[in-house]
Amino acid sequence: MPTRKGGSDIGEGRRSPAESPETGPDSAPQGPDTPPRAKTRALLRLGTPLAAMLLTLASPLARLLIERLPKLQPIVVVLLIFVAVLGFSVLLQLYLHWRDLKTSEARNLFLRTLAYGLFLFAVMVGGMFARYFWELFQAGYTLAQADVTALLLPLLVSLMVFYPLWTMVSGTPKNFFAIVAAFQNGFFWQTIFSGIKPVTTISGS
Image (tube, rainbow, N blue to C red; front, side, top):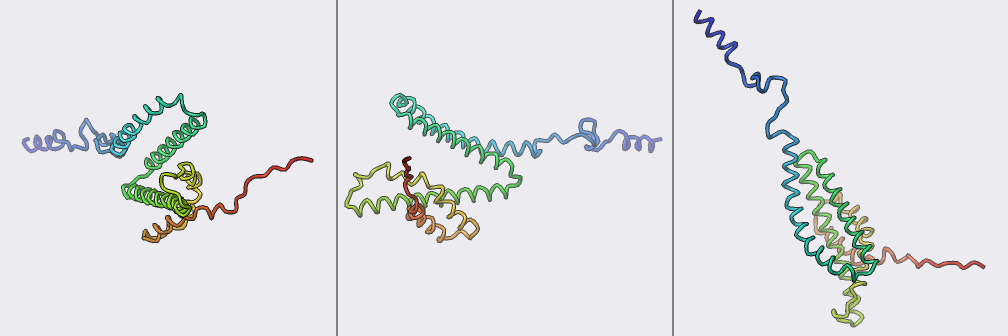
């Protein structure tokens, strides 16, 4: 009898954690480390400082825009709206692409590639600015006589200048050649559009 009682304790009274009434062998895992929750926490850790930085930068800009909005020209308002929509679209695409990445290695590779591309783009824009100041000083003008409109004009075609550069260096090892190529493409950006002529209209007879 004692043996039977002990056996009943082992068979009935002592259950493994996997077969407990609360969890059961067929119940879904409810721990805090499930993949969806871990992924959500990772997104929150990434998005919280980014959102705080955007709010910090947007607050004074929004205040300045509200103060000067009645004085702005309609074309400036249209450009500001376009830049805002474009910036939001870019951030949304980056967020969706980041959400689809499954492993930390893929996310680290994406961040490194993004940072590398932004760095080369900044170097290329620096080459565009250097070309303007080169021509400015060659013409005998001073820095105070610089035209901001002419300085920012290359930014309108910066993506078209950057595309062949990124196509060339994206599959190569990261080295000093890529930095020089980015600056060179920016400095000689006008050669890409040297064949573009103004549109002429033909008057009817």
